[in-house]
Image 1: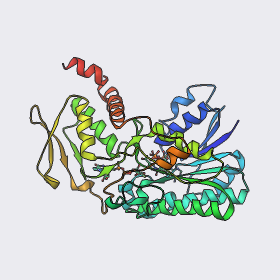
Image 2: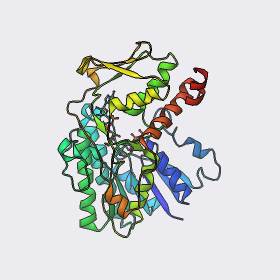
Image 3: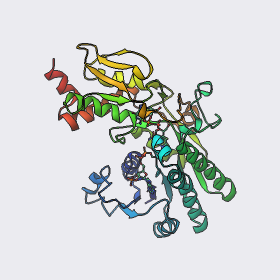
Image 4: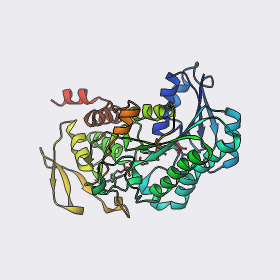
Length: 355
Ligand code: NAP
Ligand code: G4F
């Protein structure tokens, strides 16, 4: 039975990867931080199965800022594969806590790689690199493994360090280490302050009368949004190859935040009509003129990544990976999940009742 160690197991990707690896027959170990309230909501359901909890899935306290803890855990667990998903992963927040972001999202990766090297552990290493490395310049799209990097945030710069230190330990010490350069991937488990989840939750909350309107920042930013569940398989495939390489995973499509808003409301039969420009732009319900969306400059970033559009042909060719969920299916899945959670009905039930 192969053993995997996941940092960031409590996050969106960590939870999907845990399910995926358990299904493949792995013994899975995850590093969790101590919180005053539980942070394991996304993986708690796995512990309901007495065949899995503490038999095939084990949690250990730790932190990417604590080298001695990481060294001890590697020695104790002896994993065959390590997936480094832990990070201060919020781009806007990284402008507020740049030094902390560098410690966790940047130097944290070095701590893990160095623990592998020092322990002479024969294990494979996956680094959660990001399309934020590209900086989103229109002239570079579609971005692939050869596109120059130009990070635009403390988060992006910290991830740039992690990218290169992963390459460096591969080349210097022969560590089987891969960078997965992943474009945005979302799901019903996405953190609530990322734009997609903020939008899909707002659709349900507005219908439930719990929220008046949705306030956003840059409506024109473009992202290549896929479903997180699809991307997990790509991470695993990278570590199953004969040689370690870096790969882009993306959908090869790009959409504006505005399009995401329109399609999310459209799922519940609301058509958005836009009026005004820039900070005065507003989205109204076309049927009755109700204000549903406005712009609040507090959500603008000091520097913005304007356009992410991936080209994952290398992963398609060499890993046989491709996304399975379309942009529209992703939006439907997220709105439906938030409708069930917030309103207590599915999209279908809601549309039937409001025919
Ligand atoms: P996420 O939901 O924000 O999860 C981040 C995880 O990191 C959480 O489990 C968090 O633990 C953990 N963490 C944060 N600081 C830590 C520390 N100091 N020590 C140990 N663990 C710590 O992120 P995600 O969306 O799953 O993304 C996974 C990884 O992929 C991240 O590295 C992210 O930067 C990268 N990435 C994500 C995307 C995307 O679109 N989702 C795209 C490209 C790259 P707590 O629960 O304790 O906070
Ligand atoms: O959802 P976001 O916060 O994601 P962002 O910044 O693209 O970062 C995510 O994807 C990266 C991969 O490219 C990951 F590396 C990273 O860890 C994270 O998972 O913002 C998406 C876009 C941005 O252009 C932002 O300015 O949406 C724009 N936006 C507009 N209004 C907003 C909002 N973003 C947020 N979070 N909240 C808003 O109100």
